[in-house]
Length: 185
Image (cartoon, rainbow, N blue to C red; front, side, top):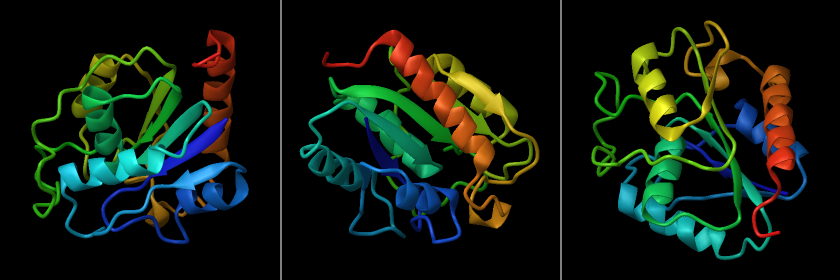
């Protein structure tokens, strides 16, 4: 299984759980963007497609914040036969007051239904996502929802370190994927 990381605006710094996981999980791919601070949906999508060209085995998306919307856009427009599952954390509300104004092209994304196992993790006090927004996203995607309590935007400022609870949730997702059978098999 390969792990494909999609970070949000500004990228994930060294104190972010995504960076910790990337450094510790074998067979990981970090999708880089040419401009982390002015995220353009079309450009980021093209960069994701380019990164996925080298993937030849089943993979799990591990996305945070705007990376979740990048995954959603990619899923609704392209998709990939080797997608095994999705681990989506802190999905921001694109219409919320705190959504970054420099992010362009993210407002017209349709949330498709996902047939692969997926989980959305949210925080009760995320400044970028109201609980109702997260619930609507989860219902449209067909994902499982795990609300972990008050951890803000579930990022480096949340002081999660390697985020053991998140790894437990990921292990459950991987078990669900195994039960469903890997894609492309």
